[in-house]
Image (cartoon, rainbow, N blue to C red; front, side, top):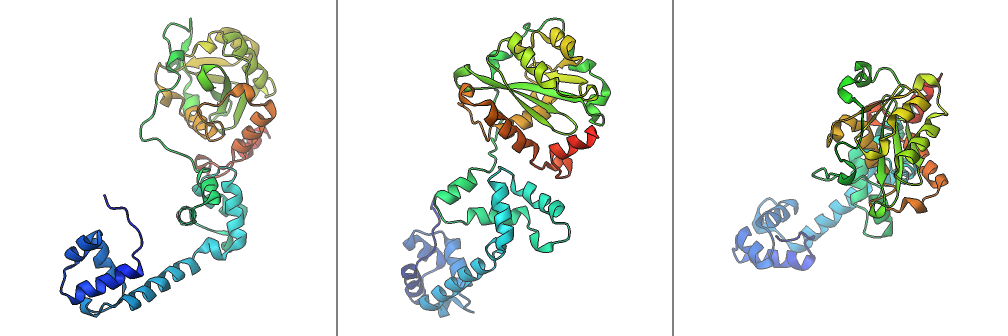
Amino acid sequence: MIKYQRITLMEREEISRYIASGYSSRKIAQNLNRLPSTISREIIRSGVIGRKYYRAIFAQQQSNKMRHKLRKNRKLDNNIPLREVVLYYLAKNWSPEQIAKRLIILYPNNMIMRVSHETIYSYLYILPRGALKREIISSLRRHHLHRRKKNKDRQKLGSIQDFLSIEERPKEVADRIIPGHWEGDLIIGRRNASAIGTLVERTTRMTFLVKIGNQEARTVRKAFAEEFRQLPKGLKRTLTYDQGREMAQHKLFSKDTDITVYFAHPSSPWERGTNENTNGLIRQYFPSGTDFNKISINRLKEVQDELNDRPRKTLGFYTPHEKFCEVLR
């Protein structure tokens, strides 16, 4: 496959000579190691009525003019306040779509502070190569073509005894109308030697990151119970979890918190979709291979705050924190 590069002035001179010699676009492309479509577009973009009038110097001038025009019309190049706001939220790991929709909420009467997410993406990918571009692009969320099964060693059947299946869960949980229903999981660190707990409220997407010393059931139970202790009773209804062994003490957990635990089917991450999606966001901060033993509680809570102050499409681009505060009133 031929990698595309901009046509140079020297190549344009060659194209002009080949045309004068009666060469076809396909033959010119072959001689220049270019695609035939590239040569055809070059001739058309030069602005000539017929290919026999193609001249290298005029084609080069037309190319320079178009490149200058594109740079001149870039919205984020011309609107400095808008660009600064966009870059600020990109640094907080917000997606271009989240930024675009959130600007409408933040500046409802200021049309100057509006930009589409397509424009943000275009701006990012036309930045010149360098540290700034790498830093900004790295803030964008990565997507895998195929979902990878994680932590299969935790998904052993028979490790959880006397549990309630997700099929027995009240219908109100699936409807997401009444807050107080949670999903939980562990994110495993390097070499399965460390982990953090994640708790996500299904209606508001409010997220808690829980520091745990190890993955033993007793440790996880106490850490999760302590995290829930700060919440009012009305926001502690159910917890949906996978069949990881760390939740083996679910009955004691329910006794400590008055939260009923329901367990998803094995290898069915979509049954805890809110938590799975949130874990993907958390991986932007703590990629695979992170040693969570080296992550301080302060850093964990900093990330928690950023996640909860990040607008979500499913919330109409309000933040989990804003929606959670509404139900607390």
